[in-house]
Image 1 (tube, helix red, strand yellow):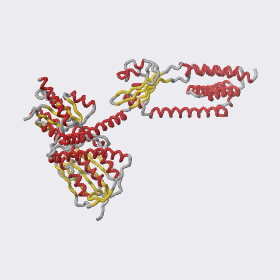
Image 2 (cartoon, rainbow over the protein chains, first blue to last red):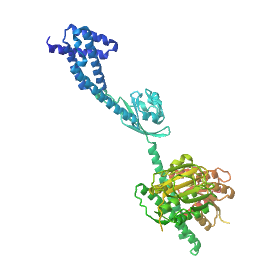
Image 3 (cartoon, rainbow over the protein chains, first blue to last red):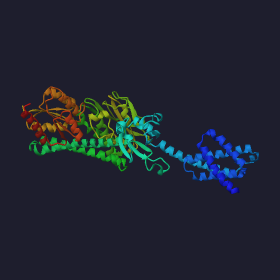
Image 4 (cartoon, each protein chain N blue to C red):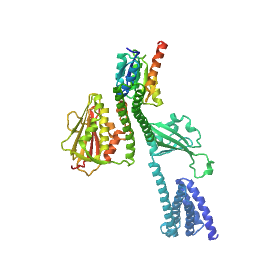
Length: 498
Length: 129
């Protein structure tokens, strides 16, 4: 037999042997190898040819590696080669110089196999990292509705552990009440979507048929299972709800002064005696006030969107601190009197006469804070405004009798100024529950307790915070539910010398 | 005096004033409540012929007040017109569910409101309840 002929026969021999080996269990391994080695010896083959043929076979396999199974094959095959050489060597001592470590071809092959292994592991790791890190829940189920894969996000969404889910029938676990008992039995050919409520969360459920086979022709396009995607959309829904609620609140708030204006104007137009100047004047002044209220509200809505977009322009100038604040506070006297609330304003002597600030912004701060305090303080209560100069950014209730000491929530920001105007607005009203304290400066947020008492837009405090921060100041609140609240703002003091 | 007693429950004094002015003008007696609780109390104490009830009020909102008035044997016959700035359909359904006889939204026309009240009170007389 020629050398080439032997090579070809040997290659065929190898293929058969390998397939035998790979199909058989480990227990046959040694025996297969020994028999084969003896066969080779019998044929008196050149050990070089044995090794080269095997290598050629392995290299061919290596070039075709695309799936992990082929990778397994090459490793098993390489292991076999070592064993084979070892067994052959033990039978025929003359082969002892053929060692895997000094065979260049084998080294190269092993290096290639190693690189290939790394690449596959890297890709596998990448896919696993993505699947494990993604916020969407992923569940893979087979054609018998058994769960064959689940990622951590899905475990979290379902509130079940991997052990409880893996290998279980999906319809026994969950969704049955949402999707109907037979849902997972039917063949799903297209993507199915539905929104579900699960453990107080809103979940977008999507199921897509999946073909996991490497070879399409084998199953004639029939899906081998389904991929279920779970997306927690609770937050989106919440944003949506808050927006809808905002629109409702704004429309309610707009309609209230509008209702007054419409009713007074209609009455003035048709039903007030021409001679009754007193009533005419009273009604017109109410229409005037309500128009102002309406413009303030529209202004608030516009201002906050402008501030958020960074388009708001402050128009700073020299103002007389005491006069401006007193005037703003005094504009609430009629409302306070109506609710029998005592409203007072106190100025510390250390304050400079004039400061540099946007007069409208200052007025708005006072309006929103005092307005809120009056709104959330029951009949017979008090609202007081304290203004002083301070060097500290610490938030603490002014030490005066009757003011509450409660939990504080404040937004601290670095500021380089060392003296501030501190304006605190205190009341003995309904206060703010601890749970709501961190959120009260959020846009559109309205405390549960405040919703019924006096609907608002949920914009007042958000706007105050925006104004304070745009002026490099800080804002804080100290409050105790049922006892009252103190809102404190500190704005860098820019004194104007006269 | 008068052709009937109207209870106006609204936390906005301006709204109470203008509704009160108009009803007094056409001959009704008017009493006022500034919150839901007061409305329930006055409906018992004053036995008004009709109640005009706002929804968003402190202490007790209009829905609760309406339910309280309509579940009390002594006051359940008093017609209630819910007058509110909450204009969504779901709000109206809620209002009618708690027993309001009429649901009207703000802004409103005082003349139309008087007409509505006359209709409600008139139909009460003709059905002879």
